[in-house]
Image 1 (cartoon, helix red, strand yellow):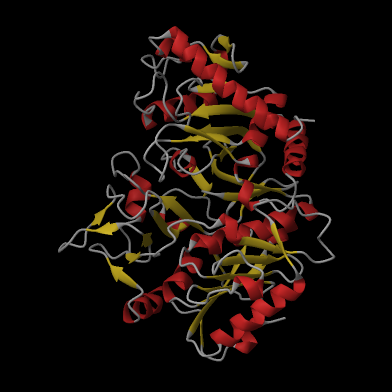
Image 2 (tube, rainbow, N blue to C red):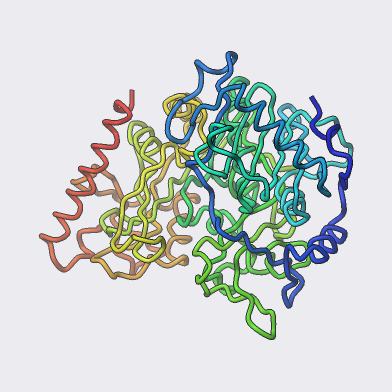
Length: 502
């Protein structure tokens, strides 16, 4: 099946400069002062998880984790929607990029992304792997923001839809301009396909130390996954999506999609410099009137401002996108309640528990209606992207932990102490991270936090002014105990929903 055969006005594999010209000519985007392309996504400034569907077809129906994030669409509904979408696109100018996913050659999949917008074509070019030798696509994504579904006829919830057909390896996106849907729908498909080849797909970043050892960083949006893996002392393998095979770790992508709200050159120089280059896309960032300078502090459009750029825009990367089996894994959590230690070393059972929990917290003001810290759980640190039951991925992780003797740490990148306490600084978090990676933290005496059973180092010489015991950061002992007990209870309730760790 080659959907491109139906589209006659298709601009194939345009260069970066050509896509800039088309995006500007069609008034899809603006040019910033420093040469980045600035795009605005309108009504949707983030993903639409309630509008995501998986086609319920015979070959995969018994495998899928049917849930609110994996809603079924019948084959007949899919064909009807696909037919209407093709009819709509036959009259449009379209853009296609031939790319691939999975840096490891054994698992490489040719990919074609067909888009209605030129800037979406550049987004795909930036985010996926650019190939010298093109092969016939095995995976196809069609993205048409201006085409809207009819819920009564098409079986969707609204005019917006993201539909994944596992058997046909075909993805349909419509009714939303948010480019992240392209990236995450491909990730969802890979998360179905790769376990069949004994590859654990992971929502994590990865980097490589001078000692040749790989570290993985799992975390939800805002926890520091991209920031901490983009380390001036280590080489970046990838910032978001990876596979763990029998040979080691490999990046799924060829680019980065970094959150840039309140981005600072002094604290994140590599990411900041990447946003200042021709070829980068900056999404939903306000341009200052007159100068067209990027205002990273302005969240009037959304807190979820983003930059999409090729990974080679960063100074220190692993060009082939693969690394050996990891020796250290970090689960990142933004604990807005201030009761988790800055860093804790996890036992195997705790690893599985926290992997299934996927805990972080939303902070007041970051989303409409959030007026106080709110605990958030996302299984395997990415529930919206897992087509298979979470315990399938947890079992694969456990198997690899046992085989490769990996150390796993819980890293709190949120606050420590009463509400209103400042966020733990990036400098302190980096120091803890490096101490864990170089082995010095393991030599310290450890203590145990009684509410969560977490073992943490009693001190860290690299950050002598950081309190390691969360209780010690609170002036009100009673308030600390009540807050910790409430969060621990939430953890227990959430784990019960998964049926425990077995």
